[in-house]
Length: 200
Image (cartoon, rainbow, N blue to C red; front, top):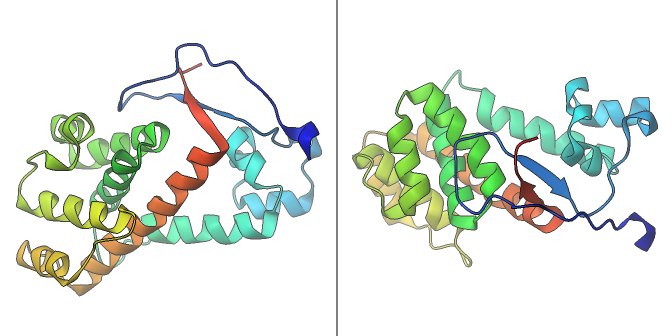
């Protein structure tokens, strides 16, 4: 559907990883808010997501977006057991940093910094990548997230053992895997559909 391809010149796109809010511009025309039907809103799960060009693009397939969004919310917000929210966000940040997804890294690093109150450590991860020394628990979490994100993945039992030695239990280790694996996929989807832009 060539008519849906749009060319939007990006002025000074962000070139570095940041915790600041930035924008994102799709390369394919999203639906407008006026085009959204009840089926689309069901796929968005939350009405507020209609303001996002990214979600208005994905909602062209509302059933898939609904499943994606519910999985996303369970991975990051279902913290009754398992990993604390901050470390789920850290796993997503590590995956996004490794994949080169500047937009996703900005969102999840900001949340990791907010929940941990360790803004400088989170920025060190953005600046230096997975080699940053963040303390052994976070180092183990970042290493596992990057191993899951690599192509092909290099995650193995040594990463599980390191996470366990750093104090994570089985449910917490499962959450590291879920957070990193989900965002490895989410980054690649976003990277294939548009590009980061300066904050509006």
